[in-house]
Length: 304
Image 1 (cartoon, one colour):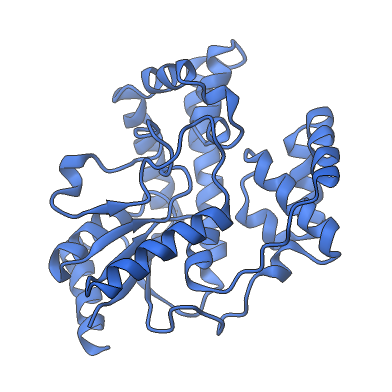
Image 2 (cartoon, helix red, strand yellow; image 1 turned 180 degrees about the horizontal axis):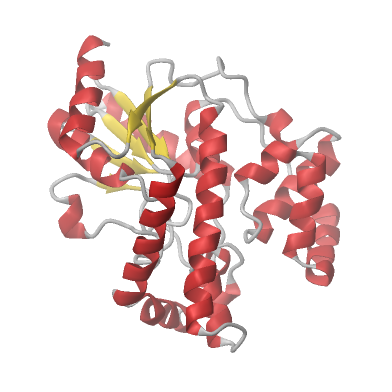
């Protein structure tokens, strides 16, 4: 019988390696649930596994959209569920892995996506241009604190969408999210990786430094040539936004590195808050060895 396993948690906790390890053990294929790893060419800054690191495990929902386009949750939900259903119908198990909580919830649960209103969207986009994404995110935090936790202030497109839904429905954006017991895949098993905050912050700082060493700036320069500035979501991604500002002379390189690390630490805290609310998640220590984490997940799978 095919299994549906979800590996989630904050950034830099080792989710991808664990997902590959589990997939290798149970003969599964992997579905990406990181909103920025959907984009072609966004590799170093999103910590996307290389082909060698993926090994023989097939990965889906990676490199599926151009940086000039903007991925949406509803679009992602349709494609990810279609692939999961296709794989499971063929008898394959599936491992979903990522840190974008809303994308994982879109797979598992029955989210309600209100239709867009072009006039409201245009008005909010104009406001965002006039007062900035930070002010729009502050407004969202006042109207719906839970949504503000889930949506990075750098992602102005998603902030605007949340405010649009609030204006259309008259209810908080998160009111359109399902209860914990509402799920499309009741047999799904969720595992989260947790790490003590100080240790995680140090790991994030080290990861950011290594990204620069691996050629992150060159990657962004190439994406600028490919039109990343024409899209809204990709250019707002953590690290990419800072390097773009650096290229425009707004930040020095040292400032871009520090701001990337700071923004990533803040994002990790928001991820922890989001996932901590889901009682379906079984938590594992991210500081234990990979073999120990694999053993814990495999033991739970065998018992199910």
